[in-house]
Image 1 (cartoon, rainbow, N blue to C red):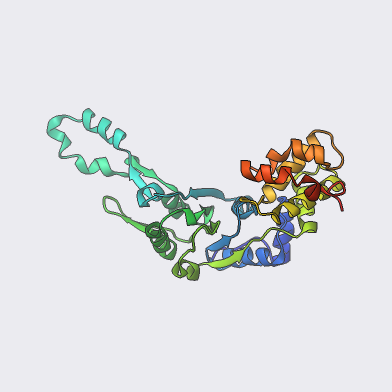
Image 2 (image 1 turned 120 degrees about the vertical axis):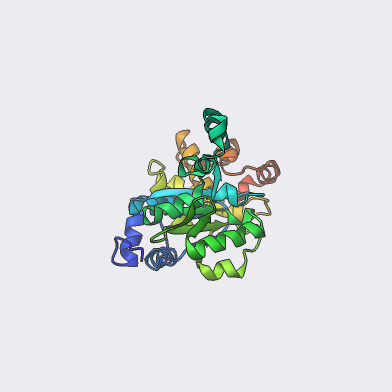
Length: 294
């Protein structure tokens, strides 16, 4: 079994704080159990709530390599697992004498011609790695089924080489923005945790941890304004990452409290959609309020 170098969930929470990541008890418990029980952890939530960061911080805490598989529409097994270096094979063929090329054809499919993709790299690394399968909801059903097979065994058979299996599995974090529903079969294989936008006080704490140069009053102004933005009818609700970016930007300008003029000038730090900016620009007084700190 994989083991965390922490004796309790609370010790893990404190270690996460040391890595500038504030996790509530539910998330810390999910991470603790996932690694201790060798179970993949499926994290769902809107974009920007800190799902990907969990894998990065966990790799740092465990002193492991972070191996990231970024999912996208159309990704297939070869792009995720392995493929052959055809250009290198062609060079090797040309270097052979014509009469001997056929005799050495098997040599062209040896390990030196194999290009590892993230899943194979994670299988080989085992407990030396944290595997991040990012935004699985962007991939199609067939790839999700393929991933489930890999997560079940952490082994793959390459016809030309043979079976490659992990002695012990890596820690696995799977994230989804829930643009589509993942299948129950994959969810059953994983522990599950939903990461929501944090409450106001926690978001202020997060800004202060991730951007300590931002004064506390300004951090509260910005977090309050972002909290109000999320309540508007906008297409893309800002995540914690955008809150931190906005606080950084405003603090860099030397502003001590968030006002309408500064909010209007820096709106691109928190809203990345033109229609959203147009909507909010007409309601800045409502968003910022009494200096954003009311």
